[in-house]
Figure 1 (spheres, rainbow, N blue to C red):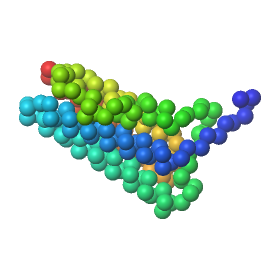
Figure 2: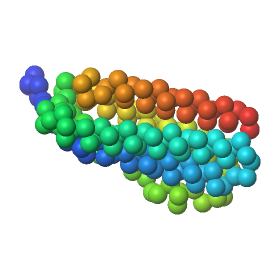
Figure 3: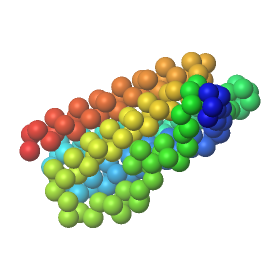
Figure 4: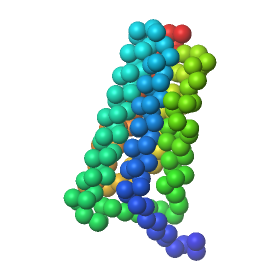
Length: 167
């Protein structure tokens, strides 16, 4: 790189679409998990997680829509260092986004422990993705709101871990 600063632009619409897909797949995963268990508390927990993921999806859809209103300046992201990120690679970190359909992924043969462990890992990977995404979003474009979603995803991890500890 010879000391030159590399500028990489990201299409904000694509990145927010990836975030929407992550959340949409997360909601599908949790709805499918809820279908697999008759235990009322487990069923309710998974449905609540699905609702939260749906709200996150709507948030990112709103951010993407707001880009039209806020103008072209907010439609691309620029890295502030020499690290090159590819939006699809970043999304690959968040396994809710790029794996098979969560409704197919859960066959019904998994134990509750297996599903909880899987969900915890998916939530952690999602946090990694959003932490990386935050570096490309200005305060004006909603960086603080992404921080809020990261906190909510961390709360999901705590809920899942507490449920796992009860097993």
